[in-house]
Image 1 (cartoon, rainbow, N blue to C red):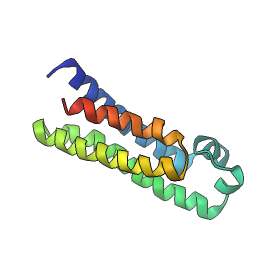
Image 2 (image 1 turned 60 degrees about the vertical axis):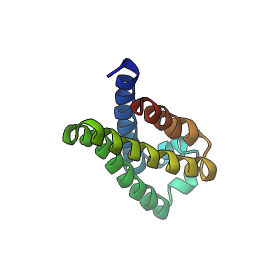
Image 3 (image 1 turned 45 degrees about the vertical axis):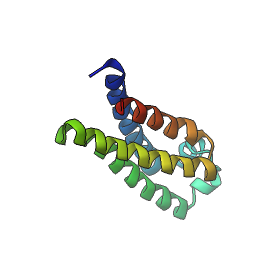
Image 4 (image 1 turned 135 degrees about the horizontal axis):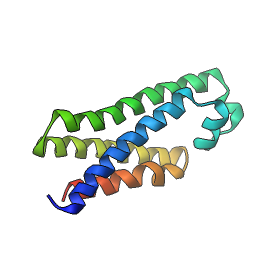
Length: 123
């Protein structure tokens, strides 16, 4: 295993941790913090329907982050890499959609780390 591959593994873990952090923001952060983090108006993030919708997204992000990390302890070898490649691919697709529809910041914050991680673990 080479150093770039090892860096990829570390980056995959960071992507997983990032999604757990996004989960926290979407479920537990104040409406003002959510507005700042997700480029939304505070008036929007204070609405009950917006809060419920973001909390729902938070559950998905949290489970995705947890899965990224847990599979390391459950799988080994090529199977682990294949699952990580699939999960990074999912993140890339979802981040592309979010970048085009929500905020361009998603391209850098979510999609770029997943692309780099995918490339490095695929070496």
